[in-house]
Length: 489
Image (tube, rainbow, N blue to C red; front, top):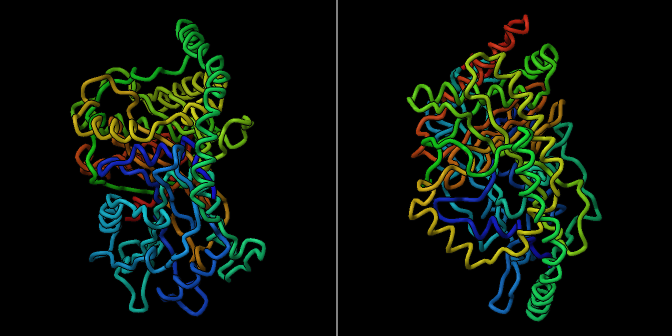
């Protein structure tokens, strides 16, 4: 039995039919590398074999009326791989827009909480090859795509990448399994143990509160002092309002692209910035053009919330470990700057200010307060907040989430198939209906955009503007941009 931390459980409490709390990834694969050729049944069987050594894929939620604390993870004794792996065909002609539309539909479906909180969709019928994505589908079969969805209660960026790494290998051959992990159970949940441990945790919380308050009270004072000196990251509720910042529905829209990592590194080295600065600058340029074309570009710069891993932070003795070890940093983007180079230089300074300020904060403050998350109040509050359009009645907390996750710079094989692209997709929230996540892998920067369809019916202009902003910065650095995934399509 493993109890969820307050932050893990918060993703359950905040979930509603419109605000779905799972993270996803779209993988484009070349199945020609699979030993013996690709067959759906073989892929599913190999996945089932590897999951025998991965308890995180076999655990499900468990709770009880007698449990006064957060739910626990237990072993699913009736685990059935066929309930989690589905097979569908991409509609003709099987291009990227058809793939994105299918994935957007899947992203709008809630996960079944009676089973382990993940599922995999194997999508066949993709047209083309790596060099020509829109070429006719060869008679021998073409690429396939996989969409893997996992609930945020069970993974964050680091743990999700770790699970993916266990499903990947450096060669197409199936790797041996760790014999110490095969069949390891996450345990059951005896009723008395569940109730007793939950009651103990709740009774200990007043002591946790005594230690937490002194760590929290100085934060607003220091924030205000920094703000007066112009050295603070933007405060919550200081973001300008746009059409992205309203209550969301359960329908999603998706777009994705790739840009060469060498181009990003060339920009970084020429202008003396970091890769993350280049990513945020290109996001700023893409959002500036997107909002300008919709006639709603605000004079004030947009504010992004950037997830920050705190896996390396020291864990207090009263803090439940949990899976999600993450906090958030706010930063002003450069949507108020017209010139691409000026945007990059400005974002470098703004991010440096936010990082310095964020570095002063207690890494575990958010996780510590999340331990006090009241399930019923959070569920009711989340429902009322979205259904009554309350996000429309106050300033935006922030405008969108942008995440940049570094990945391996070498070839990977997913269940034997060569990975050609890996597009990450995070959740969207009431009041912030757009998420841009970037993942570097084998010399490319994979950009995944997911949004509430009501707010962003067509997200493809955002990824095209991202490509164009990178090309403009490469030209300013004295080079010529390499062909992007979008150019070849």
